[in-house]
Image 1 (cartoon, helix red, strand yellow):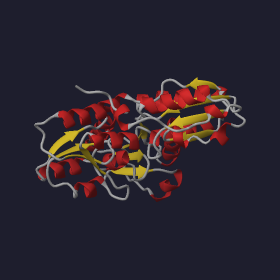
Image 2: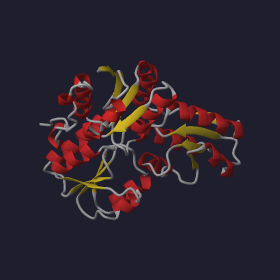
Image 3: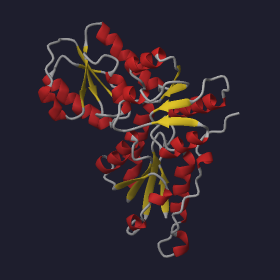
Image 4: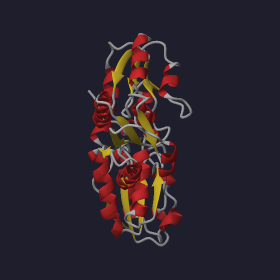
Length: 313
């Protein structure tokens, strides 16, 4: 089968940095034990399993906020994830006497600083983000009174701001096109609002790559965890911008061969938190796949947790 290996794809610098921080912490014998990560360090179950094997405990519950998760940790070291953290949660950890390590992505921190500076200058912030996502939670925590979350256009009906100074910004892993579309609707209601795009560069170039390169394919396979927002956006963009059907899979074992029945060319990309070996295994399978040869149909994955992290010495 012909495979278009969309580039760039996979790990971004923020994810690499966060994983290195966790591995360094696991090897640092001077840090108080236990070592916890507050939520998934990045949204990928394979990575969560790998860091668990290092002795680092992930405290995660999708129904709870980071503040609520922190209530489960009383001693040791806590690592905040790449998605960013609310200042109040960070202070709460310090007040509890925990050793704190912040693995927040530099692009997320940049957005927090941007919002804080504008709020200090008298602005209200309209934040385009996904409700319940940890990055959104951390961003809103910068100033819950002056940051207003909008996820969909119809939510604008209930937003009333009596302020001539407004900025619009966004979660870094949103769809570039969705953010632009929603920002325009916001500016229709608040013409004085200034839009400051905060889609991170890694997210933007991966989305643009899918929009332009998946056009030549009959199908796009996006490799990434179902919890990953940037992965979901890549699949959405294949469908909406490249007009190419798309499926998301966490690993080779999720690949349904029925999807390939009428397919001659498949494009493959991966979310920013997807380990490279997992994506490579999918690409290798598809390149060898022959719908007339049952010996090429085995989708058993051979990726183990020790293969998904960088080796640290």
